[in-house]
Image (tube, rainbow, N blue to C red):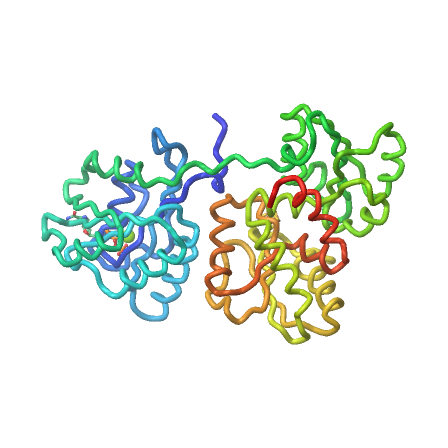
Length: 402
Ligand SMILES: Nc1nc2c(ncn2[C@@H]2O[C@H](COP(=O)(O)OP(=O)(O)OP(=O)(O)O)[C@@H](O)[C@H]2O)c(=O)[nH]1
Ligand code: SF4
Ligand SMILES: [Mg+2]
């Protein structure tokens, strides 16, 4: 069986106060004893994840998290960790018990409303006491679907599964990288630098994805390193329909190509595929008004060993500081980390998000929009600082009506 990448599974996150039955819900829904259940508050410390085929919907990843009301310093740390998972949720299951809604639930609901994350309230332990009518009405007014159940006998009622299925987000729309930009049977030249940061013996995901899409659409693909680009073009009896380059060689490629040949970068194509192309393009323009000393966040969605001339840690800060004319206060995040205090930044420069789903990427962009902080991506920032963003964005803007 072809395994579904964790990033492509729909994330369902169970949260709520301690002892509301979150772990019981996880175990009952997935039919596994994945999380420890006990009447001791604070039993679940770290998030527990369980991959599950939610039929007929498809692959999902259920998460159980620590209680929102765990006291003390440790409780705060666990809450932060839980929120990193909640930020990734496509659906949040809010577990309630006989205590009903409290301040933790209200704060969480307000937060999720801002992110447009769907919420299902499970009022558990109805064998002790059903949810009070005041809370029931409040949840209804907030547009939050509520199911009342008892899992004392560990039996999941059929209507709970049906309600979860009904709330699952629609599958992500299949967008194309270049198929709507390049004419049928068009030729795309892919510029792939093999430098010290290139993985040994393989291509990276954006390059593989582009080559696969071109093949799927019966388009023609030619690959070259930057140094052999001119020689590659000389072998052709017509101009290519598009040249796509790694952002790190965008200036070199722009200089080597006559202005009549449309060119763009993998980063720009990925901004359109996964993110919000216009928002991120506008975000890049903010580099113009950055001043030395401004705070800039560089956010990378997965962690890897920092290399000598690391794009996030070295190259982008160097380019930005050169453009701005002085040192900036640059902060970095990797993996699931994304700061709570985005307001202190003047700009967020996010990676290309190739390993994130569209929903995850859009949720991160939304967090920036809510904080009123401009956001762009690595490649756009690099192209902007080198004066070639307009040219690299042109083929996408011209042919997609963005
Ligand atoms: N009476 C009753 N007890 C339940 C029900 N569901 C769960 N429990 C019990 O409630 C206690 C807490 O359940 P858990 O699933 O561990 O709760 P939790 O929310 O994961 O708790 P923490 O991990 O501590 O945050 C356990 O003793 C469960 O057996 C229910 O519907 N009715
Ligand atoms: S998700 Fe971001 S950090 Fe991870 S490989 Fe893709 S571009 Fe790089
Ligand atoms: Mg638990």
